[in-house]
Length: 210
Image 1 (cartoon, rainbow, N blue to C red):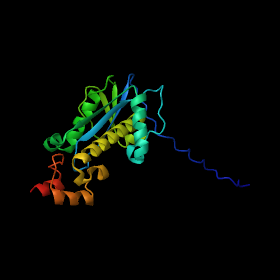
Image 2 (image 1 turned 45 degrees about the horizontal axis):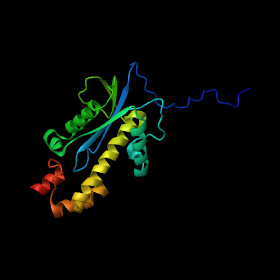
Image 3 (image 1 turned 135 degrees about the horizontal axis):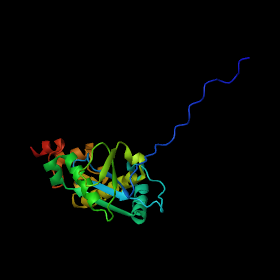
């Protein structure tokens, strides 16, 4: 007699990705903010979380609201074992290119940690030059809590820079578009030209400067 139930076993439920590293010691997560904008520095952050003080709600900063990021920014600063935010300037971006400037900012963030990590996990597929072991993790800001925390610190720091610079050059609207090449930003560039914090090697800015 044929059973009414299928003889095939159901596939197991997919489990969350687990990252197990056989390295004893502290682990730091690293991420950046501000590679795409036409103006301002690129920011990077490094975070070593404290397992004894878990932080709820850590996620890729792009998936959080500004209010959520601000709240988590303060909590990360209060609960992490240590953290560091660094940047590469507009001048360095124009001299080195945005990729190399981003890696420089990441290295500075790691170097700025009060406690030296044994392992550094970096969001993306490229690594800065570091003295300790490091691994690049694509979409790491969604997979590794320490990288999520770093993405939040970098994003909030970058947004705060934009808000402060907007006070000096309100005609560009940095507080609204955060330096990205929106229609409003491009229109302001065409009308007012470039300011000192515009990246001269980025095409829309270079075209205005011709």
